[in-house]
Image (tube, rainbow, N blue to C red; front, side, top):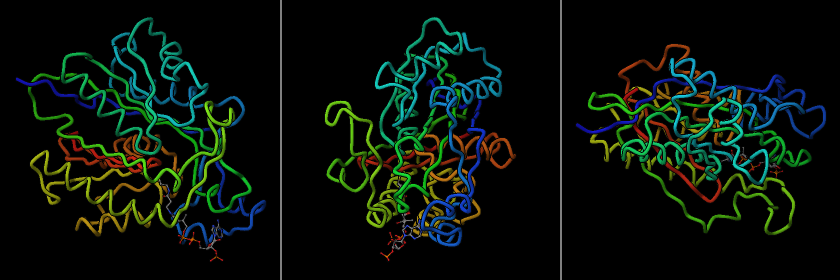
Length: 320
Ligand code: COA
């Protein structure tokens, strides 16, 4: 019998303030029409002064624990993916741990930007399958609004804040759980998507910079290819997939990727219209939406995928 990491529960959290395209157009040279046509984005949520990556992550984690019916005290591992931690250190995962009242567990952050959740899930899955953890919280949480240049219309309209979480539980035997994961990184593309600051270089937090058109081209190629790889690893084909829950960067990337794979757009969960790009939070946020509205059901084959700064990219296939 082999150990598998099963998704026992999902949860998410959004800031209280929702900002639509029209509101952005009041202070920027942009329009609702341009943003919707080029990206599919209509609204995003922006954190207020009392909301941080840590508070959003904690709320998402609480909801995932409730959904799983698992007590916080049973959690022995927290992996939190973020590029916008509350502090440079300690890890935001330890803030979540304390807020949940967990006295002792393994807790650390993972930095892989928009692919962060896939990286975090892969690490947690490995630890569970090797017997190093029994119940894990895997969280993606971001406050990208704090690293945006609000005068740069080519980037600031694209991102939003939020958090999503899953509870992974070790199960012996059975058919549910994470079936395969595959990760990649290629650091040669640093200058296409990066933040122009950091503790060890400028001593500042910095602002996000992106060459959108080039990122778009790489995203479609890399995502279609890594989804093919992960399905091969699991011994599955595109026709076996019930749902794809992709990183939500741009509706056109989702359409182009689905087309390249020969996948019906009806099988792709889309939340970028309401959340915009929430980086590491986007996959677990979208998964939470699709589970709670009844689309993703127990037994379904689900593919998760993401691509982000680095570049980093990855995919996971699971039976929910
Ligand atoms: N409002 C109005 N016009 C805008 C604008 C905005 N918010 N942002 C850019 N423009 C303008 C540009 O200045 C440019 O004008 P020009 O032709 O006069 O120079 C024009 O729109 C086209 O810009 P371009 O960047 O070529 O548009 P695009 O079709 O490539 O769309 C993105 C831009 C960013 C939406 C698209 O490239 C994209 O989504 N890329 C991927 C980004 C991404 O997903 N990153 C995250 C990965 S994790």
